[in-house]
Length: 259
Image 1 (spheres, rainbow, N blue to C red):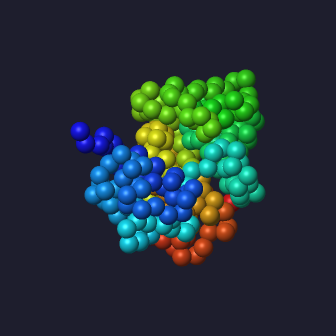
Image 2 (image 1 turned 135 degrees about the vertical axis):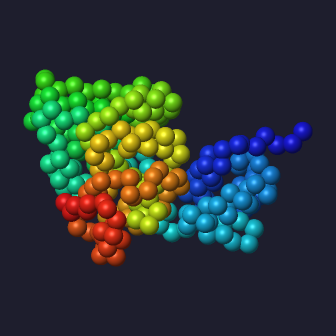
Image 3 (image 1 turned 180 degrees about the vertical axis):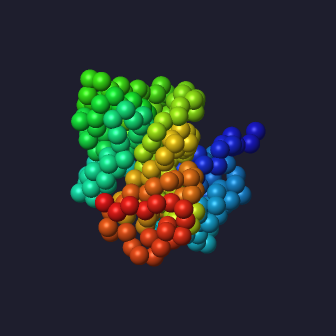
């Protein structure tokens, strides 16, 4: 009997990237054993990851590409770029009004934004982030709704078909979305394919779609594409964004705001 092959390339590739984070290099044979696939399938997975710029192919294997964004747990994310994220959150809250319906994606910047919502009245806030649900304080006239779903331990989020089905039925005034990596010429990316579905649903439920991303996210690479830049109406970032990247964004119809 042959090996049991995973039918989900993204899941295999996530395993390969996690292995590379620990070991910095991988052979085709190691990738095949890790993912329980043939060496031919493992070679194709390495080629796909190389085409995405996430690793560099070597003779018989691959090494981790410098600058690749791998998923950090929530506690680690909360320590990174906090001054810039705080400024972005303060700029983002200017888009909120009394009576607004708002969707908040998971992430440090959206959590900082949630902490600024207390002064508003009659808000409806919806999220799949358990951290936002637990820590956010709202006026007594406002409502916070949590999606159902499967909890991802150490990440404080709910994912899966239950969460996606609920969000797909929603239409809110503004959806605030984060990203692990942003490539102006191709779109926004997430480091884990498990959250891609709920993130796509979160984007599409908003009448106005706002991407919150500090400038370091534009220098990162991540595993799975979520959507194109053109699906957003507004991008809010900090003043550390380089001119070349800013020019690429300004050529689209997306409004760029500096915090």
